[in-house]
Length: 347
Ligand SMILES: [Zn+2]
Image (tube, rainbow, N blue to C red; front, side):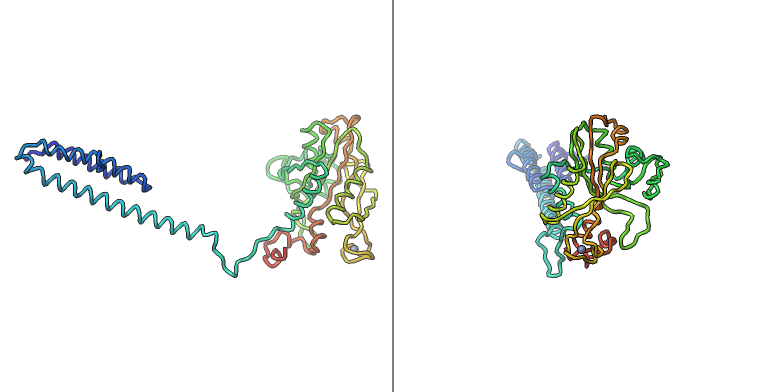
């Protein structure tokens, strides 16, 4: 059997190591580091190759050309890998350009716009935050207790019939039917005094038409303190509407109203912001129903663990969806929840 020089064996091993390391590279920097490690001035293959000078003349003759061959293969491997890497990196850049060209523009591109819901929510958040209210985002998946019982609406209460509820298959869980669920959570979790505002989606299992949808938005405020009064609540509600409709003269009026979670309860109407003598929006009455309000029922406070002899709370809520429709003259609620670009482009 032909004798294989230990030098050739070591060079072949280094060649294999080099090939294995080159397989894993991802960047030019990694490639350069490996090239240096093997064939740089101090590279292992470079140094190993120099050992040929210590061989006898006979050995040099037989081994020399084999060493040359190995060196040639190593060079070719390195050059081939470099070419492959450059090509791959170029392809990646091209691919990125294809997907991330943020400057891409065509004359047919649609301009984006802010949804009317978002505009009204931002307005109401600005107004109430400036008045000192803290904004709370409640949960849409709710317990029967927080949505009904804690708000003085027990199982047999007739008010439950008007809340056509989406019940979950989980026992005692539902999609909230109003944003007042936030009140019951806050009363249970916070120590008075505090003033909060909340807004968001609510759900009723009812047939949809131009004025009804299974999802609509509500907005409400609640203040709890040792001294709260209806007159304070009415003044706050009026101020919110004046700021919202940007009309400092906007008047409001109240009527008695019934809601299980307030006592006494009132309904607040505002002067129609769109006319002087009656229009189709106010149905020629010059007044628009704005929402329900009242002093929070002592039962609610007690059910939520608040001492009703010490604290009084007042709350006011209205349909945010209705407010959006009023503000933008939208006559079909379904447009707000659809994806009609013709409709959305107007805002
Ligand atoms: Zn009107």
